[in-house]
Amino acid sequence: MSKSLRVAIAGGSGRMGRVLIEAVLAHDDCSLSAVLGRAGSASLGQDAGQPFGLHTGVVVRSDVEAALRNVDVLVDFTRPEATLAHLAICRQLGVKLVVGTTGFDEAGKAALKEAGGEIGIVSAPNMSVGVNLSFKLLEIAAKVLATGYDIEIVEAHHRHKVDAPSGTALRMGEVVADALGRDLASCAIYGREGVTGARDPSSIGFATVRGGDVVGDHTVMFMADGERVEISHKASSRATFAQGALRAACWLADRPAGLYDMQDVLALR
Ligand SMILES: NC(=O)C1=CN([C@@H]2O[C@H](COP(=O)(O)OP(=O)(O)OC[C@H]3O[C@@H](n4cnc5c(N)ncnc54)[C@H](OP(=O)(O)O)[C@@H]3O)[C@@H](O)[C@H]2O)C=CC1
Ligand SMILES: O=C(O)C1=N[C@H](C(=O)O)C[C@H](O)C1
Image 1 (spheres, rainbow, N blue to C red):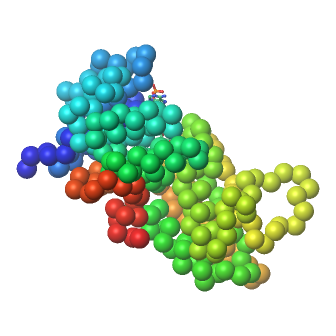
Image 2 (cartoon, helix red, strand yellow):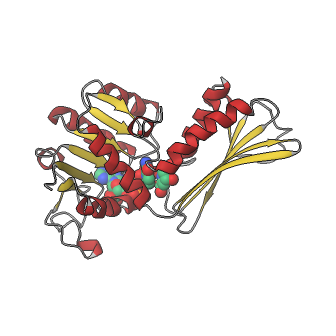
């Protein structure tokens, strides 16, 4: 079978970048067409697989416009500022985009939405099937447990993660708040310290743990007098995110312009 979808990877030297390169090379329908590196990075000009002992035949490049000229879809797990710079070039060239990057501010989210008017984009804080199923379970749980249950979200990640709470935890909060008719921005409590007073029953609390090599753990707790329901997801390999990202890339191939997420890709909406 010919590998028909030409995929580029941004942040090729990152934790997700490496796993994505391996996943593209092993994929039946995707070919590795370009790998982007940050300007000044030592990896520029090297084979993209060199840091992990693979020969890919694709060298790392920082000239994004030239690198994306013969590409169908860019898969980007980097930082918001890098993703938004890549987004502008994808719009110019008509290249589709899968965004795994988290930590966008409101302006960044608005830029993705606007670009969805011109190109196909899948943007999701978590590409795993399990987390996306959890979003559906949370919607049901929040509706059934709407009164008398205090809701708290706990997430844990590796020591290198730079944004908090995780994009996934924030999306879990949004899903629960939407199901309850609450506005997350006004009911979220991001950590507690000192004399906080009793818990406001309408609040949704977040707690963040960072350390070691934790790939990504998320738990939403619904706590009442006499019982507690917990919905948990634990990722043990980044390959689960990479598989989801490539599933999104293949799904985007014959979609019209629009801003989609993994709920669309997995037909969970
Ligand atoms: N949606 C999902 O399923 C998942 C999302 N993520 C998200 O993906 C993102 C990346 O995570 P991770 O791989 O662990 O992070 P890393 O720090 O390991 O990798 C980030 C990559 O982005 C590159 N980069 C950073 N800033 C720039 C810039 N300004 N211009 C160009 N390239 C840049 C880095 O280059 P350099 O090496 O030169 O610094 C590096 O290659 C995070 O936002 C994370 O939350 C992670 C896992 C799953
Ligand atoms: O930075 C990570 O590693 C991860 N980030 C994502 C997030 O912020 O939700 C998803 C995953 O949990 C791993």
